[in-house]
Amino acid sequence: MATASSSYQQIYERRLSQAMQRKASAKSRATTALAREFFISDNASNAPDRYNDATGDEWRTLPSRLVKLSNYLRERSSSGNGTNETFPVIVSNKIDESRRVALGAAVFNQAPSTFLDEFRSLFEALLRARQNKWKRERVVDESMEVDDEEEDGDNCEADELLLSEEDQFYQSLSTLGWLSNQLQTPFREALHSVMMEAIKSLIAGDFETEGMLDQTLEWKSQVLVPWVYSVVGAEAYE
Image (cartoon, rainbow, N blue to C red):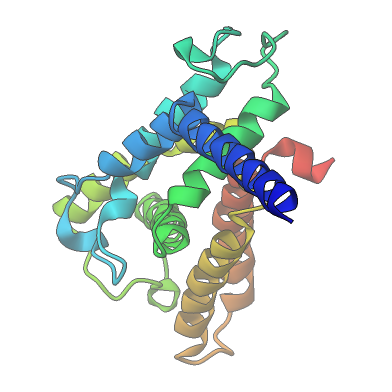
């Protein structure tokens, strides 16, 4: 009996030791360190107050912070940045899937509960910025007002600042591979929210006004569809 008890104790100690080693190894991985840095550097930007949201202003820094993660995936190195994490060399600019999965797991494992809400807020702000730019570049009937706030110099500057990071943000999402899985819900919620704002604004007045349908279809073809295409990428349409 004593022998069996001793044997079980040894097995327990060995498994505990292995678990501790795995935990220590995980902490030393490049992906874990990057994820930790990603959220530590989650500081508020000096963007205009126009984009204040219930989730806070953390979403404003997402584009610049995601660049660091995507750059890590593009590195043509098999050393894992000197950690215990090793991956095959990336060939022909293709991202190694094991590295991509490891990084995604590390980030979302450490993510706060509001992380997906931050992406939703950013998607909404980007679509509204495109919409506002479209309105400024054409003569728009009053019925097409989809934003109750007055257009002014500060708002225009805020939109341009946000749109200047747009392409890099979408490229980072494509590299990270999050849109098709982790970010499906916030993307769809943002799309639905802004789209319903526009529709409600249009039908708030006389929805039988001549040309309203044409104007709505123009908004769809020149704002909504191009934005979705930019976010999801050309491959989604193939």
